Amino acid sequence: MRKKTCRRLPLSFAKASIELIDSSIIKKYVTLEWITPSRFERAKQFRLQFHDKSMISFTDLTSMVVMKDLDIGYILTEDEHFLHVGMGFNKAP
Image (cartoon, one colour):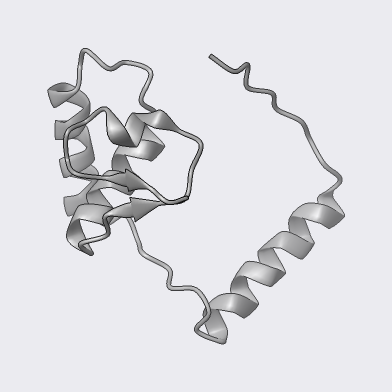
């Protein structure tokens, strides 16, 4: 298992990232999907369903809910958790 590292970058980097994301949404390069109360509830159910897979983050679980809603089968990630839940997800090359 690869060790995860966290680091803090200067606020200017965060601001530039947020501006880039906002611009991408406005230009319709990116679609923002909200975690609605219904999606949040389903992610909680996944947490209970996958109790034996405690290393799966709640963020991953909410992503799985959105992927199921939008019929997305491929994900660009180094995270193997999407393969371990038996929902038919595949890692993009």
